[in-house]
Image 1 (cartoon, rainbow, N blue to C red):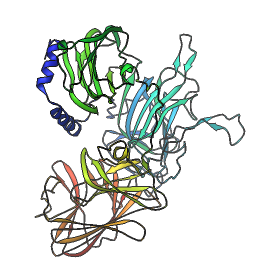
Image 2 (cartoon, one colour):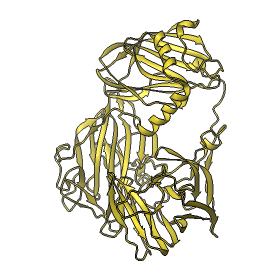
Image 3 (spheres, helix red, strand yellow):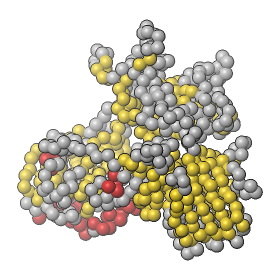
Length: 629
């Protein structure tokens, strides 16, 4: 579509796709193609050269193991890819990166042994705490993911610490499991004379998929920082003097406060009711005006049906790859250098097709941005960009809600002193499950079960359930969403008849006519017991959360006349540990069998992934194990 004129481009869009086709495309992209981001800078970890001179407590290993029952114990094997700290007497130095940073987006996986303590200091000054906080009920600033306090030794004893920030919830996994940390940090700002004009701040801190902090301002370096002053740049420091810690998959993006500018910007307004883009040359221009920014505030508070077309030039600060993304309630399109980069022709409900990638040279490039507000009450459109050294941001002014105060409705389902069972649709690995029941337990351990397949989908800790997509307005999506951090399980049928241990496990696309759901009943404590028949076997299934740790006990009884197989887990890699438990590495959780006499789990590899399965002989058998995370 190179060098296509805007009017013919719109006509082409009309011919190219229908609304229903585009909506189906959105579903396909969301399922098969995760959103693209510009690549991170990865730390190779083939040796220690990514860091400044290191003390002997730091080394590079191939794998690590931390026995979850042993205090401050970490073992590593020879190899590469994992950064390991095992402090000893006289060998307790901190580790500093060779690179220095101002604004940065940092991601990594970290393993904390039982009772261990470490920390990551941004610019060597501002600490995000790494600590074994598994089982902590009320997390403090000193717990995993907390922003550590500052310290003033001149204050009265007991009040020296201040400005610490506890995480919103305890999202720490069990010791010995890999945990994913993501932090967006902004350096303090200084004027030309070196005077600080703005404090440093953590824009976001995520742990295991849970947002722990948002826009937390830092008045100065936290306790035990490497430097007492504040600067525009500094190295990452990893604390090495407290306890063992391991890290892998370390990657980062450094940002330099760059932005795209506009020149010769003109906005045109057209009346329109069609969901598909018409030929704009066939419409009368209602208004035309010069603009200095993309500003859709004028349409945010009325029920008009219009098309807005912005055209002009973008000023690109650096040559390189750029990602543009549109999220829209209605329709939208973006052309750059007369090429169609993003086409959302039809009806979208705050959807995105995913970013469009384009390589641009430094300087001015022509562009056209079109927003089709074809439905009166839908008023949302936003254009985003990410580029080299440029954090993703919105290219337009924020749309205010003029004349009315925004009312935030809380559709969270809270668990009181008794368990709660809530039916809903549920998303599992990008697929909507329609026969789900979620169970919330007062101890703060919850799960979702698929009645159609007889399989446990997810377990999580923290708050229970967000019902916004079920109860807000018409609740079109009917989706429940967990409010804590989740561990996703395989979600396939849990029982199957296999010819042998090398047979392929059936997935949810294979309808099992021998499966008959028999419903569920509640025990005296309000916990549901699920029952079904499959291939001549009667199955009862009960999940009991622990009140002492983040784990859930599965108690399954199978009574049948034929041999049958049970699938416990699958993952990138499943290993049996020295203590007899199994670790599932892509989700990083433990499986601990107990009181399952005579049953021997098998780890097998099929189609590039490991599966943990158990052969169940005929007769009445019990399968009992804990899922620990």
